[in-house]
Length: 256
Image (cartoon, rainbow, N blue to C red; front, side, top):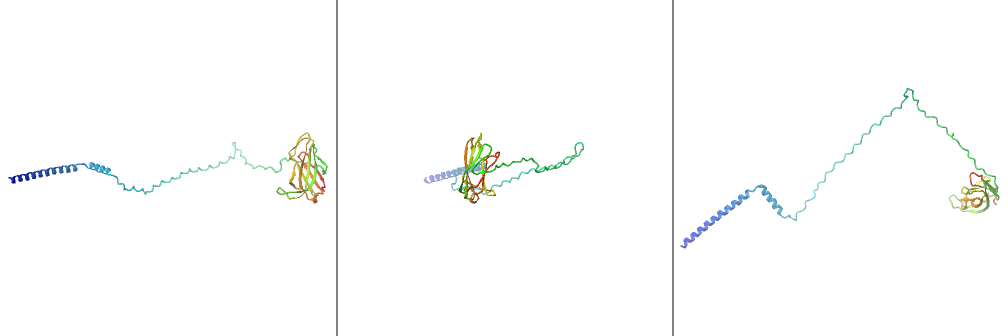
């Protein structure tokens, strides 16, 4: 009886194993059919989803920059210059009047002769006869001058062109006996010496010329230093003027 029981148990186990195997086979067939039945688009989407879900590899190196050079821009073509218009040909001057009378050719004319303009004679300022060095010179306008001092000094060169040497210091006194003031900025004092009337140069050092305005009834003095060698003082001449409308007064004599 024990033998029959074991046989039945083995039979049941075998049947159970066959049933389980059949079930597993059916499940495997169903899964395979489901996988093969999916469309290619669905499979591609699944692969993309799985790829996006995968974490990025931090060791991946960044893409190298492109070494392609930028394309050169086309050079701008120069603007075309406008063509120059041909110059208009000069028109010939008419040779006849509307009535047929010929037009005479232009004449250059006769140039005016040089030196035909009007000129005015300029009268030189007269010089009055010289008076002795110690007298008074009268201009005839109410103004008089006198040489109140002639002193031998040593001239000192200060300005360009001056040469130090023997000199005469001449003091001039001007008196205005007219009714109006007179300007003195135009006063000129000139000294010459010797028979050939050699002009004497002046020294700025020590000179104090007449200037400004001389009021009516007033008297003023000025000083002038002239370079005069000692051997040329036997014949000294001093001329003074203050305006072109009055004559020049002169003094002459020897300075010992």
